Image (cartoon, rainbow, N blue to C red):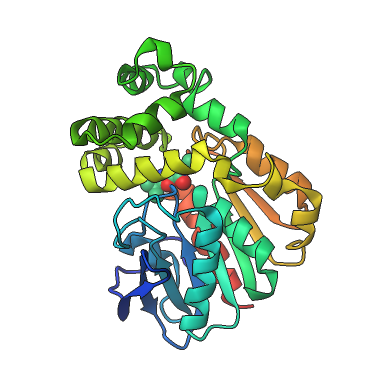
Length: 319
Ligand SMILES: CNCC(=O)c1nnc(C(C)(C)C)o1
């Protein structure tokens, strides 16, 4: 049973899979080509995968499949919002699964990755062997308002909150997501870049229990920040493209996945996706194992969170 990341590894196969006339998505495979397939679902949306994400899976046991969702990471066109919705991404996972000749796979995702993993599993339960979900986010209005419009978070990270709102004129601060979306879709590259960095800094600063400079500095990677901020804001102004607020937690939706082995891992001091949503998911789905990591924020890289995620993956490899 591993309690820390497996050694760094390189993909044994990387490809760009055409999924529409416009979009090609990056699919990288790591570990044992004959192992148990696991789909890694990255966060954001728009965050993209990192080779480090593959290190949570025992390379002797797993065939880890890291997919950069539309417009994210190495997928092309970069930061593209056209034909980029939750249901396009769900359909893309099915195209990847069929392309790779996989019948069923483990599904593993955190934050937005937990959102998309739930949406995928609820639509295709017959293809999901297990679910490992971290930092639960279901894109309800209250979740978005809490983090992007305050006031909760500005009491906890006041200096970063002031930076985040500084980009937006006071008259527009009543709806920060709409105000940022206007700038993130601007034809003025400088306006778009300033908004992308400020939005990303807000999220990177608040993702760890203690602000981590390397994590924060990711917001200075203009290419990452552009995709991360644009695609997040695009999904949020469209309420995740879900039929109703709270859709993923509805009884009928949970009933479709209730039989699937699941572990929920939640940081007790997750300020981006606070424990209330994970608790609501646990109440709706008591069969799912529910782990709260005491000294952890939002990120999967928090020590206790990383350990719990790897332990869950090691256990699910035995299924
Ligand atoms: C509300 N979105 C949070 C999320 O999904 C997320 N936070 N950080 C990430 C990355 C690790 C991908 C940067 O994703």
